[in-house]
Amino acid sequence: MRRDQRLQLTPSATASSRPLQREAAITLAAATVGLVVLWFLFIRMQLGRQFENVVWEHRTVLAKRLRVGHDSALRLVDETTIAFGALVVLVIGVARRRLLLGIAVTVAVAGATVSSQVLKRWAITRPPTVGELARISANSFPSGHATICTALGLAVLVMIPRRWRRLATVLVALWVAVQCVGVLASGWHRPSDALAGMAVAVIWMAAAVWVIARLGRVVPDDTDHVQVAAERRLVVGALIVSLVALLVSAQIGGETIVSAGGVAYLASCAVIVLTGVGTVWWFWLMLHDWTLDARPAASPPVVPVTGVDGGSHPES
Image 1 (cartoon, rainbow, N blue to C red):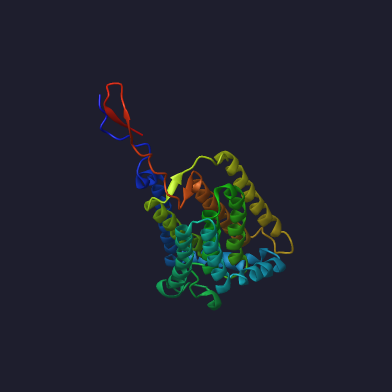
Image 2: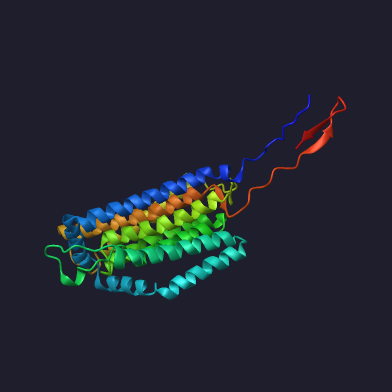
């Protein structure tokens, strides 16, 4: 019997990347919904604005030297940092022969940075709030520093080789948690500002991953034998370290945390830490089984062979 069909050993590049496309799209949509919900609860609603003002006023549960330390660390993140980070991303892309990925991630970092400033300075207006101090009445939603730090952290996670992602996940999770809590501890921002900044960064980075997947420039890869459970333990460890450090720091030279405002501050910081660490872990989980900006292997050519009946049969 003659076989006239060619054997397709691999699906099309676009079809094979659909799981990653779907997860990136869900991530983008969830971050967008989260951004809108934060805006509604803490910008449009007066009760939310008043709650955040209480949290801001009670950041003094931390020792002054810790608040100053956060302030100094945040001042290191500026236009130079962004430019250097973008350059590093491109260099990694060129070195790994992943130029398309490097360009997509660089655009995502730049897009997140610009869009957070557009939202904060022009698109969103903070209504007047009863009892609000004049010096904190201006809009600060979303936090540009939280956006930049989260975007740069996720950029590292996306760009580096898969064998380094396990270590990078823990380091990036700690980086995002510390920096995003820092914008609150230093008095630069309110809790929703930090969360919204993370959401903006996630939107852009998820969009970059979706574009790469949509172009078919990803391939499934199961050579990374790190179990999800093992990675989860590492991330949970980073989370516990962050939360314990937060609670301990509140007892070192700061005011009492027994007051409702102090508890609200610590609870807000805990939510920021949980969100930051959870976001980084989700990106690791989403990218765990994929190699980005790589072309799927082509199907082997069909080679005609002679069968027992003397006919010629295509075989791959």
